[in-house]
Length: 226
Ligand SMILES: [Zn+2]
Image (tube, rainbow, N blue to C red):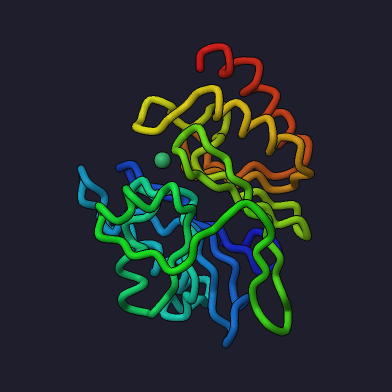
């Protein structure tokens, strides 16, 4: 589903746990695509075909999955990153993540091509795309969020969801760090708050007011329990 400009959202529709994926089309050299968080190849419990479904939905948008040139992983939990290895093998796509996520990713047999640090990431040649990479730990140590200032888009991964936050009880989780990460991204100018899962809501929070209300709700109602 096209959200704005050349940004597409793929909200997970299955019954099992899997992540939402986001794609910025034709933005790399040779009109290749940037994909954020491809999710599972196959979901672990109900064996739903996560990657095949993502590819099928991309095709209905006229996007050729073989043209994925770069995969950014917000973090290395398998429900976000498992399919990256396969897309890399099949398309020659590069995989990028924060160095602090590398350990878990390598245990999942993933290989990393680019390490993303806090700062601007400039992609493409003619129509350059500038993204801000923010280190947003708390759910996992090297979790990043991706901010696209030109479109006021925040791809938040598992930092914040609709009326909830990412878990802090998994290895490397830290409640204080997550609160700080949420506080920091809540100060950005956001028109599209794009969450890593469709928990009770598609996870696409559209409009500055709706994004602000969601941050306020989480700070008021979820922070005291973190
Ligand atoms: Zn996660």
